[in-house]
Image 1: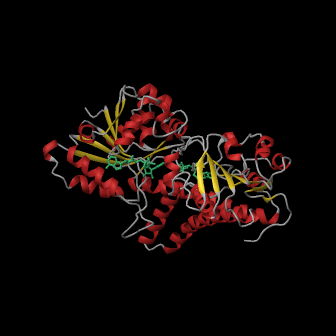
Image 2: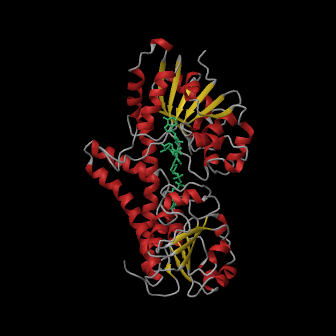
Image 3: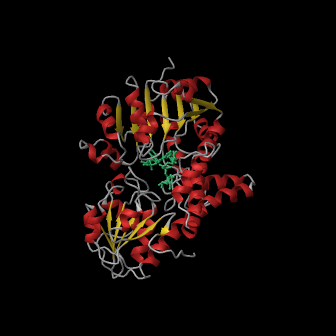
Length: 472
Ligand code: NAD
Ligand code: UDX
C-alpha cells in the first residue's frame, strides 16, 4: 500500500514548523513528526504556554493548540521518525557559505547533506524525499547520489526525490500556506508526485498545483525571490530620486502600480529588504550564473543586492547628518527591530545595521519591538544591554512612551501596525527639542507629525521641513 500515513519533517524552523502545522491541521489522518537537532527549539515547540513558541506567526499558536500531540509532534528523536516515515520533508537551513569555494555567495549544503545521510542510514522501505528548503538547481542530484550510495538491501530502501519549494512569507505564513497562489511540485516519479499532491488537495484547489521537472522547480524558487527583491531595489532606487526632486514615492508607486502589467504589490520603498531569503537566494543565483559562465547574467542580479546595500547605508547616513553629525549621549528611540511586521525574526533586518551605526556614533538607543526579545537583540548587536564602555548603548523598552522620553529622535525601522496610528502629540511632549522623526517605512502622515513640532524625514519624500534637498 503506497498511501502516505507518516510524515517526518527534518528542520523545525520558520518553514518546517508552520508548514507541518498547516499540513497536520488539514490532514487529520496523517501523523506528522517534526524533528530537529536543536533541542532548545524542540522544547519551545512543546511549551505549555503558547506565547513561548519559538516562532511568532499570526494564527500559528491556534493551530498548534489544535494539533499538537494529536497528529503533530515535535521531537529530537530523528532516527525513530525517519524509520517510520513514508514521506520526509527536508526543511533545514541553507545559509550562505562562510568559507571555501563560493564563500559569501554559494549555498552551504552541509545541513542538507547531513540530514540526507541520516535518511540513508535509517529509512525503511519506500520513502519519498521532499526538498522543502530553497536549494541550488540540481541539488536533487546530490541528494539522490547520497541516498543511492548506501547499501539499500538491508531495509528494502527505495527512494524518490521531489522538489516542493515553499513560497510563504514570514508574518503571513499561515495565510500563505492555507491559501497559496500555487503549489509547485517537481519530480520524475509520477507515483511520488501524486502522493504529495494528495496531501495538498485536502485544502488546495487542484488547478493551483503545478507540476514541473525537478530542475525547473528548484530554479523557480530562486527566480521568484530574485524577481520580488528586484522590485524592491527598483522602487528603492526611485525613492532616492523622489527625495531629491520633490516627487513623492507613494504617488509614484500608486501611479505605476495601477498599470495592471506592473501591479501594485511589492512597491513599498523602505530601508532595504531584510529577511533570511532574498540576499541569500539572489547571491545563490549569481553564483550559479558565474558557474555556468554567464557573467552578464550574474552581474545583472548582483546589482539588485548592491542597490539594497546602498539603500541601507543611505538611510543611516541621513539620520546621522540630520542630528548635526553628533550623536554622543543622544537618546534615540527605535520603533521596531524585526525585518518586517508580524514576525519575531530579525535575520538581515535593516534595523540591525541602523542600530549598530547609531551606537558606534555614541547614541543611547531605546528599542521597542512588540515581538523581538532581549537575547535576540543582544546577539544581533553583538553587545549587551546597558553596556557602558564609553560608546553608545541600547536598552529594550516595553512601550512607545518609554522610548520617547527625552529622545532627540525616533526612527521607525519596522512597519508594525501599531506604529501607524500613534498619538504624536503625546510623543512630542515627551521628546527633547529639536525633535526628529525618521520614517524609513513611509507609514506616517507628514501633516500630522509636523503639526506636533517634530522635524520629519520620510523615505521617498525626504526632509519635508525644508525645501533644500540633499545631494549624496
Ligand atoms: P531555520 O534556520 O529557521 O530552520 C532550520 C532548522 O533546521 C533549524 O532549527 C536547524 O537546527 C535544523 N537542522 C539543520 N540541520 C539539521 C539536521 N541535520 N537534522 C535536523 N535538523 C536540522 O530556517 P528556515 O527559515 O525555516 O528555512 C529553511 C529553508 O527554507 C531554507 O532553505 C530557506 O531558504 C527556505 N525558505 C525559508 C523561508 C522563510 O521565510 N524563512 C521561506 C521559504 C523558504
Ligand atoms: C520572502 C518571499 O516573499 C517569500 O515568497 C519567500 O518564500 C521567502 O522570502 P520574507 O522574506 O519572509 O519572504 O518576507 P517579504 O514579505 O518578502 O519581505 C522581505 C523584505 O522586503 C522585508 O524586509 C520587507 O520589509 C521588504 N519589503 C517587502 C519592502 O521593503 N517593500 C515591499 O514592497 C515588500
